[in-house]
Length: 287
Image (cartoon, rainbow, N blue to C red):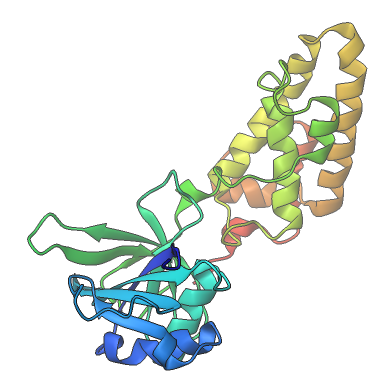
């Protein structure tokens, strides 16, 4: 009986003669001999090595990307992450390797592994031409292989990132009937987690989003007032703990930095509006 093949990923690459150069890279990655790796044209079924531990089906592309590599492995072959595969191929062959992002619901966002080890988020588009033409339209950093790409951050990937909220979960677990009502508290705790973990996923956070977070914090007292009396004290204690974390992660500058960055008035604001992160993430160009 033939081994079951597991589809690991599809990598898109720049560079010349990639099908001629990829077998030793994959063999080294999976601790195999080159003979145990089958590199084949995706339309060629006659000369396949069906017993290969790793199969790499390739197809030529046009535009910014030159090759598509669909990699599958036998079920007893160690599985590697797409990022490890992409970075290893990029570094070994001196190319850029595009692979899927960790945002399955945002299909237009990918990641690119560069030969020098960077892994920025990018926006890759495929034209409706025949054959289609691939274009890297946006990249978080400048990549020489994509000189026409717009270099900027991608704010759409920030909020969907799931971050832990242990304090909120302890008093209003996920699935609780009051969870949606207490979203301002969930968001408030997520903001402190963002600060403490260097503003994932790209060490950047627009000032406009920070303002939205503070506006949601403004709503918490009114939200608590809507809760049953028995629940109010428990939630207030959670808010107080998140507030203390926020104080520890910020600095009182009378609101000057945020007022300038977001062009907002600081008149008649609550105390948290007058504090800024130790390293304001909107001041970090990251490029």
